Image (cartoon, rainbow, N blue to C red; front, side):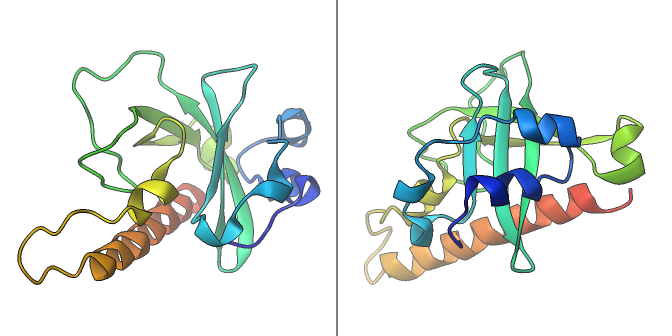
Length: 163
């Protein structure tokens, strides 16, 4: 992922108003991020714990989304829709996001299950123990990274489509 600045982050959001984008609490440690190991940037608003933000590169352009966590917890231990990790060391919660354009203004939204702290990039880069003799753990990790990128891209494109 390309390195992002506060200015780039604020202008990248497609499902919030100009007033809302100015109010977003941007993470303070942008310069310290390991951008080469991120497939998207995700963070929570410390003042509004039910708000989350994700920024991903879509067609080489940073695109940001504001997400809202469901207030009710899920009844079972769900699997993250993006990293698809079944051995998650973290919680998975339901997030919804307003669609862009006229659909979003009409109240339409899209929901998904995600790692609560947006740890997907770290989760897919873990080397799992060999599943069987001759298992290529590095190739499996590379497939998980590509799968994560495809899931993120698909979610963003779905949200931005005129549905």
